[in-house]
Image 1 (cartoon, rainbow, N blue to C red):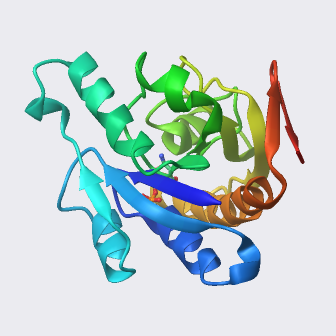
Image 2: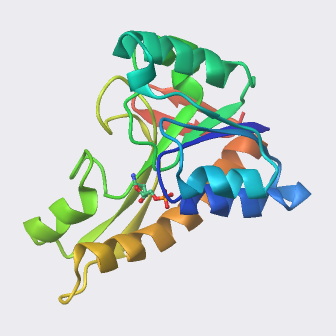
Length: 200
Ligand code: GRF
């Protein structure tokens, strides 16, 4: 299966997928890595792996909608079977969703529906939950509200900081991503309302 991975930062989730794709049995290849900004480690990881990259910054377009249209075309040009938002910090919009939405998954560092948005680990720590985790979902027009494909629970330790908690979540997140994206790539999936079933 052809994967396009979208990043905005360190790209440790991307790296886990790049490493997994080294095994032909995994059943997928990362055909391109896209970003909304340049100068990030995620793009450097793609370049080191010899994977084509593209960057489209909102500020380089007359409007957010123009960016969304252009970004959709950039991703679609690689004919992805599956697009993975791995630490991608933009909401895909009205141009993107009809074209690529149903084959785009996003990983979020909290147990949806809890703590959507940019600060899942911080919000979980501040709320005082004892269990948080990560969620892989098929994107929809909301913020971290799409149909859930997989989740992993992660304990919160009493002495956790946002950083130590997020690092622990990211360990689980990388494993969840590799396991689930691999199954989606090999077995296919179907979105039925709010349920996602793996297997063709
Ligand atoms: C991940 O935890 C992702 O879920 C969140 O930010 C982190 C990105 O990490 N949105 P990386 O860029 O994959 O290292």
